[in-house]
Length: 210
Image 1 (cartoon, rainbow, N blue to C red):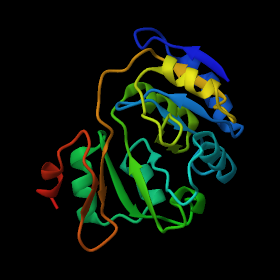
Image 2: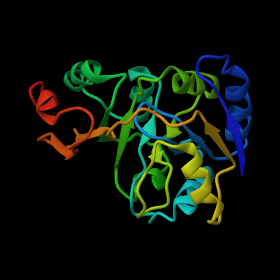
Image 3: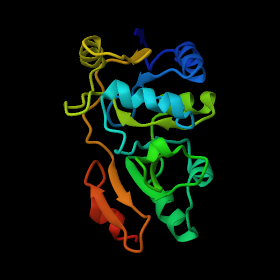
Image 4: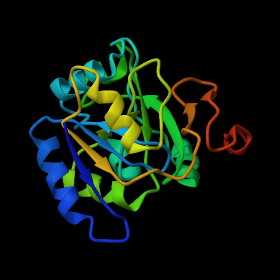
């Protein structure tokens, strides 16, 4: 497990290039987001996704969310109606995860045996740059062992994973992130939209558009 320190006020491209090299060979990485630190891999690589489950000690029946650059990426991963697109565009990039029917390109392991996938476009330039250079969606689960509290401090994450096996291949340490709730999760896969998790964006703002 390697730690790469980065400063958003400086040139982050060298770090992005090193992490992309790890991800392209099936590796895993901890990275900063606009909410908490995330644990990710190429979300279209089933073997790499399995490693994320193992690192988190997470049950395979629990789905993992995806991080994408924008709505055009999401269209390739899920079935989205024109009406749903209008709602999604109001909140992306941002802190809302939308659950949608998955397309066959999405590995079954991402979906916990189900037919839906949670997708979010983050509002975070560093992560957008990472996604752009990788060219694939990332798993977007929090960087913690299942059952423990997620954190916005990379040093705490590194210390926690040091005591576990297996471990992430690389941790991008951008220091403590600003306090934030996790994303709000909205299920659009059924006839009636449902709020699955109240997070950083108030549910009533979303429901008012649905």
